[in-house]
Image (spheres, rainbow, N blue to C red):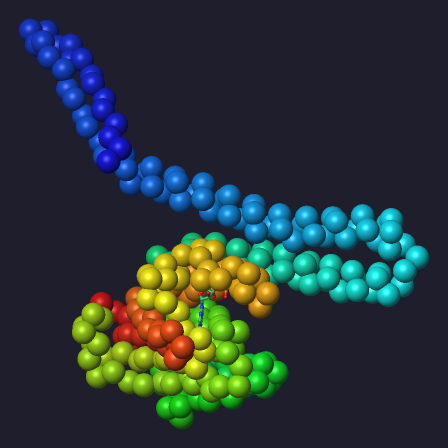
Length: 269
Ligand code: ADP
């Protein structure tokens, strides 16, 4: 515990004494530490592709100047590194927007089933390219829920993309929409959307930390797949804004299931 102690002398006629105020500042200290860690992480994440880009520029100017094959290869790598920086900056902007919105309840109503059909249709070519069969279950007709359509598209996009990235290739990824008559924590009816894959799964000890910014089980693997380490942090903030819950279940060697539970009525909570 980090405390700040302020002692003030009381000077009133006929009164001799002092006031002692003890304030618990450990929370502030923790927030400040998190902010510092975040800035350090962002700098590090940006520096890695930047260093690579600068190295390749140098090589293109020097040794590779008259080597067309090497030039083409280096330009491909440079494009990939620039793409990585671009995704990182886009995710950082998303995260800061989502954080600012978190206290404002989404006012519109949207059709959750239609939204899932459209996310799955958009990602079906990417699934095919990754050798994964993408299936959608229970999303017929219309399912009205209060929510921000753009943000929920981002949530399911991120979860399905992860299922494709870490799904192990060759398996099936399933998106399932299901109504829960009574969700105990939300204390009312809710809609559960789960995204399940048959990938390598995640060891239990990592599960509570997955939604932290830049937390990855395998940094090299995430980078190779073009990950920024911010996807699940964004998901978590958006789900919070919708007063929903995010449940993560996984078993090593069997696969993972990420379930977003959204209240049918935000006003009930
Ligand atoms: P990233 O950009 O690294 O994918 P995320 O925030 O989306 O960042 O995910 C954080 C980490 O959680 C990933 O690096 C990966 O280690 C793990 N992860 C996320 N989804 C899955 C999944 N479906 N299967 C296995 N691991 C996953």
